[in-house]
Amino acid sequence: MLTTIPGFDRIGEENAFAVLARAGALAAQGKDVINLGIGQPDFPTPENIVEAAIKALRDGQHGYTPATGIPQLREAVAADLHRRFQAEVNPDHVLIVPGGKVTMFTAILMFGEPGAEILYPDPGFPIYRSMIEFTGATPVPIPIREENGFAFSAEETLSLITDKTRLVIVNSPANPCGGVTPKSEVDKLATGLPEHVSIMSDEIYDQMLYDGEEHATLLAYPELRDRLILLNGWSKTYAMTGWRLGYSVWPEALYDKARKLAVNAWSCVNAPAQFAALEALTGPQDAVGQMLKEFDARRKLVVDLLNDIEGVSCITPKGAFYAFPNITGTGRKAKELASDLLEGPGIATIGGPDFGTLGEGYIRLSYANSQENIREALSRMKAFLVG
Image (cartoon, rainbow, N blue to C red; front, side, top):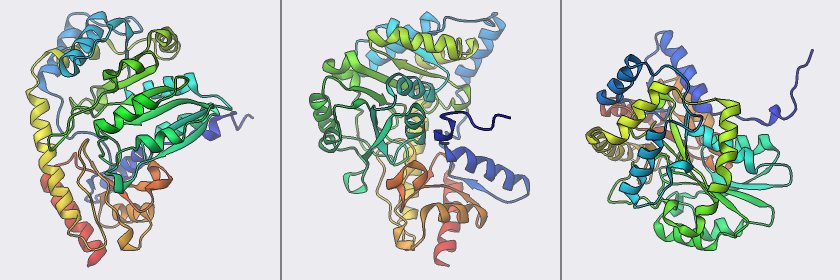
């Protein structure tokens, strides 16, 4: 009997889902668990978006759509990017996909092969490295450092590029650290990126910024457009994680290759969900602002409470909805502490090493939970660590 499939032993996982499952199992056993682990908004999808999907079903939108997405949604994506960033995007270069990971999978599969190198953030979203290793390419970590505000350094990133580098992955605002890379650094990267290197910019958190920060989209750099893959979607901004909706913008030379992968892998995205996504972009945006206002209040609360725990320090995240506290002062290993917090006081967090080798000494907390739950969780954490 076949017990191994070549290449599959190189595939990693996203431990946040394992923690989510364990937290659910403990809760089913009667344990009081507060989940600060999973990166999903705790808000319901806005009602107008839900109603758009229901209307689409009632109107008979039950069949296949084009593999690239319905034309009116691709046009709406292009219009939204122009409205927010004054970026000129051809709707024929927009691909509607079932979630953000699909764009990672597609881009890395295109550029990854034995002998190639792909740069990715560390700490960073774990699927980057997992997919790079699956293709046989060499993963090259871009250090994301606390002393740099958890932003990438353009100079350090460019220094890692060799003649084998095929793709650079960047993410700002960032998961897991909440860092936002300043425009000055993005400028340096765009100017210095060698012509033989393509870039994938993960901008899924582009509307989750605080303290007056502005998003520096890579769409704003004409010199990159013929080798830029933009990743974005609806999951975080519109509280639509379970709808599985994302989009990507591709260079003209790569678009048909991405389309062929869509045809081979998922055929098309769920039809009613695409009409919901259309309403999200073209309908009222009040809910987005309301959610962001509440995330901001939670952000300030979680930082204050973490810094009140002996042995723990936390810089203020500038984007997304994650805090990445430094726990080296506790004398504990990160994954061990994350496990003990879940099994003991019932707080689900993610150990920093699940996001890369530079994640040791940190844990990730998602503040996509109520202020009441955040207060209770960090009260339990303080009692557990300090007594």
